Each structure stands twice: as structure tokens, then as C-alpha cells.
Image (cartoon, rainbow, N blue to C red; front, top):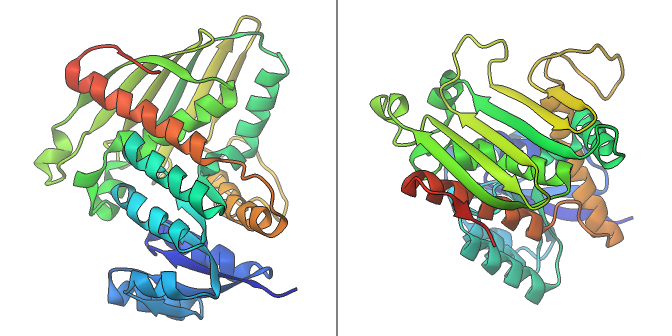
Length: 330
């Protein structure tokens, strides 16, 4: 079978995950990577044995490239995604889908016109413990969900060393959008209203013009009340050098708790690696599954509509903490 040509737009930390995954998959051929940084594009291209460019138009004009991964910073997704779809490429888009509902709708319109596949890479849906939790809730093992808490925060050292574009995003876009999607997927529900608050100060004093912390409480359409917390100021001595991630869902007949940032089980198998089970299990499978969706013409597991819902939720979070009011979602 002839291999499908792929390219990666944006080769930072997570863009390189896409390049690495494509390079390892025998069904595709990594043809080209793009970065605004010539040094970065050249380095990653050389590392994975493919062409590199600083011209996005080169990616669009290459007829051999059928799949494009968009792994640019949070605020720079929509333009690249729309252009890629208009050029007839299948698109795997990193989260958040975009930083506004209007941009999400533009991407969905481009998908409809092109007839190509679009998937938003909310990779936490592939984490075995979260899948087990979702299955347990769906099976009624804890009864009707009453409330939940979802937490995802990064250490301040990770932010200081990696977030060169922090002023264009924040913990709500970089982190909370992950757990919002996770909650909507796990509970099979959508948000109805939200109240949120934000704290800003420490990171600003260090030259990062963004929020330190965002907290939000959402009431879901089926009545469940869910609390979300994301910060960028977690202690640099936290047990995991990157993040803290955990969730709890209380039902009428039981409760589910998952700690994702800390190794609480021991598994010996080819698929698992300690101590960072979360990263290693969820990085590559969604990318491989997207390849399967393109090759087999199957529906994608995380749709553009799913991506837009998470964006709408975070938009409401921002509006709430800016106005100090409850914001209702349509």
C-alpha cells in the first residue's frame, strides 16, 4: 500500500510528538515540517529525515502531503487550519481548536467545503484510567453524577522555561480547555452556565502577561455541578516536574477518583512506561487513530464540534471572570 504523505506545521514540544509519531508509522511518510524559526525547522527536519521549510505556502502547495498536523501556539490555529482544509488537506488540529467560537465556525465551514477530515487532538480521551472512569459512569456504577472536580495545573518552572507566548494564552486556554473537554466527554453532557474567577500577579511580575490561576464552576444541562481549576504557578518542587492532574466525580451511588500525574499502579508491558503514564500512553495513539480515520474513511473520535464546545466553555469562563457574573451558554 502506498504510504500517505504527511506534514507538520509547528514543531515545538508537541509538534515534535506529531513528527515522531508519523515517522514511526509505516502507513504514512513524513515529508516536510514547518516552523517560523529556520533553526528549529532545520533541526527537526534533520532529526526525522524529512524536508523542512519556513514557508507555509510550501506545505499547502505540496500535492504529496495529504495530512497536515497543526501544532502552532494556541492563538495561531484558525488561519492555518482553514488554509490547510481549503488546500484539500486532512487536518489534525492541536487543542484548543481556536480561541473563539467565530474562529471555530470558520474552521468547520472550511471542513464542510473541503469534505476532508478534521480532528481536534484532545489526547486525554485516550488515557486508560479516564476511559475506565467514563465507562463506569455510562454503566451507572456510581449512579447519576451529582458533582465533580477536574484539576490540571502546570509547575511555574515549566511555564518559565517553555511559555514564550504566554501573553497570547493562559491557564484557561492551555490547560482548562483540556479538562473541560474531558468532563463533557466523560459525563456525556454539555455546560449550561458558568461562574469563574481569575488571579493575576505572580507571573506578571516575572514578565509573563497572563493569569496565574483560573477557577470555574459549571452547571451541566443534566444538573451535574462541576468545578474546574487550572494554574500556572504550581510549586517547582511538585512530585511531577510538569503538572498536577486529577479528577473526582461524585454520583448518587458512588464516586470515581483518578490521579493522572502520579504513578499509582505498576504495569509491565510494552505500551506503558513509568513514571509518566499519562504522557506516554496518550501522545501517539490519537495521531495514529487519525491516520486510520483518513485511510479507512471513518468518523474522527474528537470532532470539530467537540472542539468548538470546549472553546465556547472557556469563552464563557473568560467572560464570567471579567464581569464577575454567571454566564449562560446556549
